[in-house]
Picture (cartoon, rainbow, N blue to C red):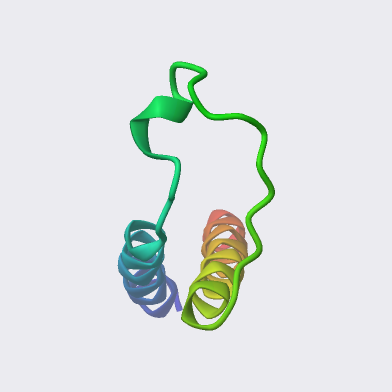
Length: 71
């Protein structure tokens, strides 16, 4: 059981990392130093799918981590 959970954790971790890296931020480095104002960005199309997938993958990642803790 623990082998299956560990394998799933690794696969989900890789996909989570990729989904986070694929997200585009229009503000760039200037927002770090306060150069960009408070803007609301609406996600559409593929960007929205990647955003929602990263949320689902992060929930699954932490759920499996908690399940591994109990097993």
